[in-house]
Length: 368
Image (cartoon, rainbow, N blue to C red; front, side):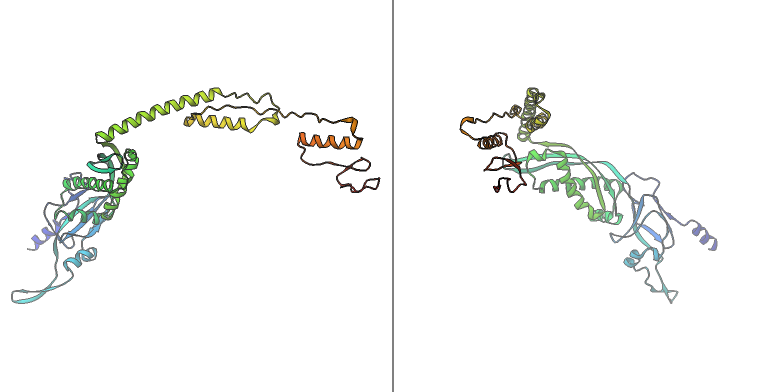
């Protein structure tokens, strides 16, 4: 017995990922429940997690590394199966206190790496719009997903199955993504085909709903891409006609913009003095540039501002004194030339010209 016991100890099992790994993101250790003896070794590969399932509920989760499966290492499993509780048994007529040294469970390995280009499909949903009435649409595309919480991910599939198989788990997750995407698009308030034809807009609506449902089960969906959006016949014909109308309108607008640019005399202000260049010419240039981009339909005509011409004041020299004559000349010049402010004063008594600061004339008259 001693030799057999030693041989049995040397043949102690090591729990690890099976060599015949199927390639899915969930891999069970065996197709049946496994018996784990306390003290056995568990090895988890890099990029993986191991989950112990007891009574159809995930218990302890192990990240990458090596573990000796003892009671301190199995707190949730110990509590669920009461491994730390003793019981009294009779052995050859004598009562003995014993503890459990093994237990039955399901052991799953979960791949924590990202899975890319996973297909999803919404075969058909119905929307209602005021203009188009009831119409149908179908959407398909690809996405990436990654497990962030192995325990919650296992809990998702245990809601449907008592035993998780590798191949079915991968396919079922893609079906979950399609179901949640269909619900998100169907429940969305956006019902206008002009907006729903935008792949980026539809991807945003769907990815929000999918992540909201799968996030609580430890699965994050990223890089959500819409490949195709198909409408029924009536909406498809409407969108095609709208597309043709937009193309024709854009071509016409670009042709009009080119005509506008060609009609502008960019040298219209060169005959004026440098300080007389008007703001209207610069504004017209900016308007023409904008017209080339968006297609302005109106024709822009630039008219340079003419130079300011000042006519000499009309004065009757025969009926005015020198002082009155000078006053009238200054007044008329101010009106015609729009002089901003006075620079001199004239004495009303003797007609002498004074500076603005002078208050009293030499003749004794007070200057206003």
